[in-house]
Image (cartoon, rainbow, N blue to C red):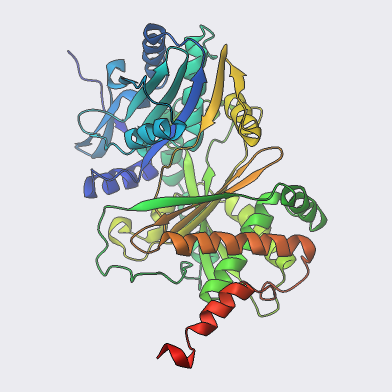
Length: 463
C-alpha cells in the first residue's frame, strides 16, 4: 500500500503541533459540536455519511508526523474518522447525555497514529439521540465544526453539498506565498509598531502564575445569558455611537480589564476567521488567526470612546490579518514565557451561509428545536477549548439573545472569581446603554452588599 505524500502545515498548525507534542494528553485544543436529534436515525446510513464526509474533507482522516523539512500532514483512509455508538436506554436526565458528550470531547487524540477526528452517537431511544463530532484544533475551528455537522446531515439525507472548489492545502499554499515574499517584512513591521508599548492584558489572579508553565492546560467555563431586554438596547447604543455590536462589546470588556488591572495600555486577542473569498467558505480546517488589538485608556476615556477605539483598532488589524499570530512572539515563539496576549474576545453570530448553526441558535433562544435534513435538531452546549488563555470570552448572538461565555484557566482563577467578573461585565454593559458618554471609571462595580462584606473584614471585633 502506497503512503500518501506528506502535506505542509500552516504556521498556526505548526504551533498547535508543538503544543500537542508538549502535552499530548491535554484536551485544551479539542473542538466539538453536538446536536440533540429527534427522529429515526439509521446507524448504517450515518456511517456511510461519515465515510463520505471524510472523503470530502481529508483533514479529518489525517495523521501528523515529523518529515525531512518539518512537521507534515499525511492524509489517510476514511476509516480514521470512527463512529462510537453508546446506548443509554435508562437515561432520563438530559444533563446525563450532555455529560457523556462532554467526556467524549475530552478524550485525547493520538495525532501520530489514530488521527484527528471522531464522532459519537449517544442513543436514549431509536428516536432520541445526541450526535457529536470532535476534532483536534489542528484540523478544525468552531466554524468548521458546524460545517462538518451540516455536511454530515446533508449527506445522511442524500442531499450532498456542492463540490468544494478549494481545499485547506490551497490555504496553506497561499500563506506560504505571502510569507515568502516582501509582504512578510511589511506585515512584521506593522505588527511591531501596532503593538509597541503595550503588554499583554492581565487580571488579578487567585493563584500566582507558575514560574515554569507546564504544557497541560486546565480550564473550565462560566456562562450567562444577558437579560433579554438589554439586547435591543445594546444594539441601539451601538447604532447611536456609530460602531458595530462587536466593537461595543469588546470596548466594554477592555474597559472592565482596565478597571480590574489598572493598566492604561494593554493587548487583547480577537480570534478571527481567515476564510477569505467564497471558495474557502465551505472548507474545513484551522482557518483562524488571533488578531492582537491594543487598548489605550486615559482617566477620562468614555465608553463611547472605548468602543470607537476598539472598532478602529480591529479594522486596522483586519487589514493585516495575513501575518500569523504564532509569529508575533519572535523568532523562537514556542519557548516564550510572554505570549502576545493572555486574554481573548470573540463573537459568534450565525449567518445565512451557515443554515444549520443559524437555525439551532435561533431555536435555542426559545428552548425549541429546528428542522434540518428531515430531522428535528437542537443545540447541545458542551464545553471546549478551555484553558488556552487566562480568560477567553465568546459572545454568542442570535436574533434576540446574547450569551457571554467565559472560559478560564483553573490554575489561575476560581469559579467564584470568574462569575464575579462576568457579573461585573454585565453591570458595565447595562451602564453603557444608559450613559455611553460617561467615563468607564464611573460605574461602581461593587454592590452595596459586597461592600458591606468587604468592610466587615476590617471590623475590630474580628480580631
